Length: 326
Ligand SMILES: NC(=O)c1ccc[n+]([C@@H]2O[C@H](COP(=O)([O-])OP(=O)(O)OC[C@H]3O[C@@H](n4cnc5c(N)ncnc54)[C@H](O)[C@@H]3O)[C@@H](O)[C@H]2O)c1
Image 1 (cartoon, rainbow, N blue to C red):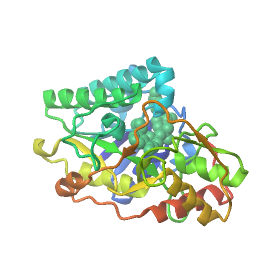
Image 2 (cartoon, rainbow, N blue to C red):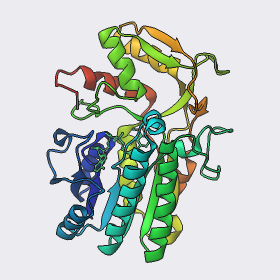
Image 3 (cartoon, rainbow, N blue to C red):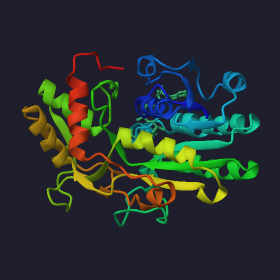
Image 4 (cartoon, rainbow, N blue to C red):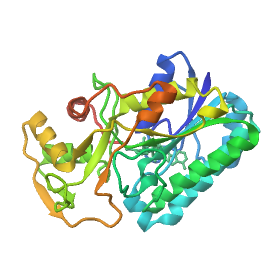
């Protein structure tokens, strides 16, 4: 398939591109490089375009005629979205509506959308499955839910096959450190933040240390970026009928606490991570982990890598010489 990957120069998108090429598909990236980098996708054509620029998006679709779009381009920080909701609605909702309109105009047959566990907010019951009513607790989560709903309506109106993939916490790098997350100092992702604290000896702020969980810190579901990328290709290839269109969790079903993440990185690095306990943050769920059974049943996808491999590969990537800043 010819696949246009928006946000393909970002962390997850660059792995999706690799997996597409590995399975013999043709890929092209559309990205404004606001957080991504061309270094992550050296082997495919890259159009430096903002998804909100309708004329340029149109021109890319006209030139490439993709059969499928994987739409990852978005802003992704819940905390930032609370401070700047207009920005999140603009990029994640208006931008997604523009991509959908253009995809339909150009006869795109399949559309895969990066959604998020943030659509569930603070789930009452974990593991959380797709029958759970969404209840986002940040503008970010709202924009992802809106994206899912727009996609459903737009796609049904034209018979386009679609899937919204609700990622849990994505982490890790290629096993040989050939690709990973080009992080900035302001990253909100826990694994790179802990690694950074270990390497620099700076304080790691932990929000919430008095939750009624085993060690007092929040529980999350960490999914290896290689497993996540593989899921996109599997889903895309099997989006053959209207019956399989819908929303799917992509997680492991195994909760890991913030404290366990810190300890795992201390063990791997041999370095202490200085912690600074902070109060709980409004809107942060205490626990959030997936029931990934539906994606397995429908697409035959299951994650293959465990949390140790996430830590091993992420540590190798962040310490293996090359400049890892975006
Ligand atoms: N990383 C996670 O744990 C996680 C979890 C759930 C969902 N997601 C979703 O996955 C997707 C990819 O996330 P990521 O972690 O790879 O983040 P990322 O920031 O590395 O990638 C996003 C990419 O989109 C591009 N982009 C942003 N705004 C754009 C615009 N207006 N026009 C064109 N390109 C634009 C950026 O330059 C970047 O390359 C996002 O949609 C995010 O919401 C990520």
